[in-house]
Length: 547
Ligand code: DGJ
Image (spheres, protein in one colour):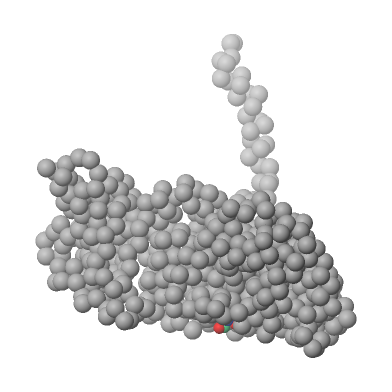
């Protein structure tokens, strides 16, 4: 009897197939998550988490909260109610390495586990050699050994409560601890709950413009390192004006001791201090990145007022005026971040995005308009009010994080295409913006019933009542996220002259997918974009043109 071709194949392969079916299944392996990284997408650079653009809608914990797992329990619930997708948490050298060479990661592990459980990512602050220009977070065995871990000294030769950035043993010990920490995170956290590291906290020196310890004095009178001189020469045309000014004092010398090249005033001292603090923190970051190369940054205590001298704020910290020096000293760091408690939030963002620095705001006061500004104007990687556990869930930030959280894919796409604008109520009753071939007039205060009286000119810092992010999501299609604004359209590209709002849908985004709600027409908004609140609304608007 002739066997069919199929039955021959069946006879050969079926036993093997059945055997394979009965074999024990190989252990299920979680797919390795993509490494968090920064990536240029279109016209912006974005934080990539799980291979997708991510905006950190974050909050920073009070300094001591994460030092107790029990203390944190009610806080996690609160953070969830505030709709955070990222917590800026802490890991401190004193708790991670309480005895030299003996590491304890129990606290950190529960911080990571709890973040996962509440569906949040972590940006972790490494509190070590510097915490607000002080060394309060170094372990006791470091604090006590001032010989091995030398201190900053004042002009009278008195040891201060901070470590000199020129102490090589301090650098080695801090780097080693950070390296072991990052190795542990690599092993414990393959799913990358931890996406970002802040290396140290508000570094620099208070009370004087530079360190006067014997190590520092000796370095001060040695030649400026060739790496810095080469960097300045290579980038001379693009240096920040503040750096150009200090370098120009002695005629842009390309070699010599620090006072020979930069002079002897407080700003020369600041450049010296920035080089050594930056070099130290860059090397700590390098040690950590050797184990887990996720993005890392340093944060700055800002210059508090025009003309304040270095030392009034921490001299040598990564303030925007010395960012060039930090970039030369610490190429291992991905960005420098401002802690913004000053009223001029926008001015600080503008100064920190000079020379291509990416914006992340690890500390600020909670302000939804400022959040919108950072994301809409500067494609900020994230925004993080300090002391986040103090906010209640009825804080406007909770609603803003909810609205923005679902819309991250849409916002990120529009950012990469350069198709986002931000509207913020200031002293004007309206603002005109160009987007997607249209000129939009954004009025503040809710629209048809007439714009609110603008705030008086003498109070320009008053928090805006109206604000919005406007995304051009497709030709003739716009998404408005905001409150207290209305918008009208005019043609701003060749074609039919009259621009009209065709349809307006309210809705929301869930993981980037648009979920429409009501079609707003008739009394609720036929042909109008109106966002009266309360809270942040989301509208999808289609516009058409005719003659
Ligand atoms: C700035 C610091 O970086 C934070 O750790 C915290 O101490 C705040 N100041 C307190 O306002």
